[in-house]
Image (cartoon, rainbow, N blue to C red; front, side, top):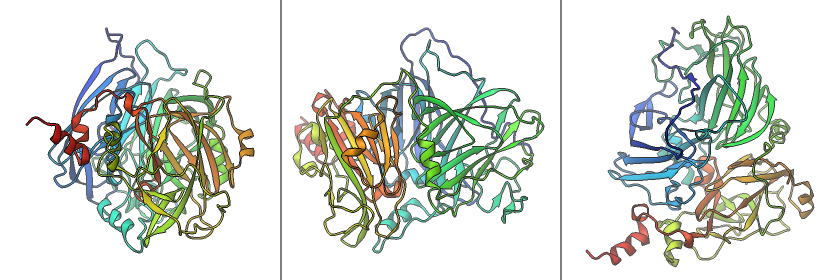
Length: 575
């Protein structure tokens, strides 16, 4: 592998940008989304590319800036939306980018304007939110720096960015058909793990170490699957931004011989703590600080490994290249070894170390409403589905935002889903499968109410199997008040952390356990809350919250140009 400097460099020197205006800038962007042939891991397939790039372009802006993005759908035969993961869309709920919830899918040949403000600094990303288009590679990084004149609670000399994903060789269309088949055909484990859109399937960067059976990669450096080397200088301090847009995999990240100091989670500062490696679930983002204080005459591995599932996917690898060393020089030691895939206590210990930094918002002392959401796998009409309180989510043809704003009662099920489940239910036994149904009902939340959500994990159809699920809430951040094992009871409230709980937008629930989240329903709109594992959402693992929709003054008609709202607009048109 020859020197790849200049071909795949991603080191960005941190420079403070000064402007004359005290209010944010407007960032004008024009994107076209189309299918392209690509080789993310050395095996050619098709990806959803943005402006001819995979992953999509990185957006860098400042808190307070406005994004003005014209998105053209050049897919020819299918719709499209993009969700801005972690951006709360204050005052612009139609720009959240969730098909059938906040907007209609953008039709082939059409252009939709996403215009919204970046309300706070942090490490975010964007991705497709229509069908399973995220699995097709429709994603990219979104970095929001602090507003002009503000400072972060830590210092660093340079900045690096990692966007993590997993990759299948089957098309996402075929995988969708598999999930809807009778019997269901599971998507299986991904063929590769990608770091900034690059992985290796038929070869390994670490093949010359004895525990690797694949052949070594013979790379020029300009291949689409050549690793994106991270270039650093010795004895400097770096901020590494990390986001996981995986469709399935819980990952463990390590930088060989370098400890990492976690300082940010999901766009919120946390109490710093040091780790040798870290778990990162789908939908999560972090910033870590590390110092290049190791032997400067060699390079080091950056590795990601599957956790939470029996790993049949090789590690994803790239190289931390110390200045003056050739970028093509393989590190001297084998890549870091991740904790055992089924060591849940390791993951729990990691998440229990995450606390909000002083100065973060504190949660209200009491809740106004509590939802206890039981997560089960069920058979419905012969199909394998996921259900919440025995309801498997099916999205309607008219976006909820339009149906609720204009009082279109036929747009979705008017019967709300249950607030809880039967107290006699045994979470350790497989689901009974007798009472589950499809539904499109909505949890109508009182505006400004404090809402507790208890995520209750349970057994799957197959006995003695329960999985980790990362749940993402649109339009809000929430406080993670606590985790527990077994079935949640009111006695567990005494374990809640009301002093310094982490403030996040994605939270995990562990096998056979519960997680308590608290948020304030103070952002007018209709918001998805769902498992961020792409096949699980596609199989019904999600709910919808509505709050203060009548407070929204005007919704762009382009966002609602389908279903019943389209018919309403046509009926009211003078032409």
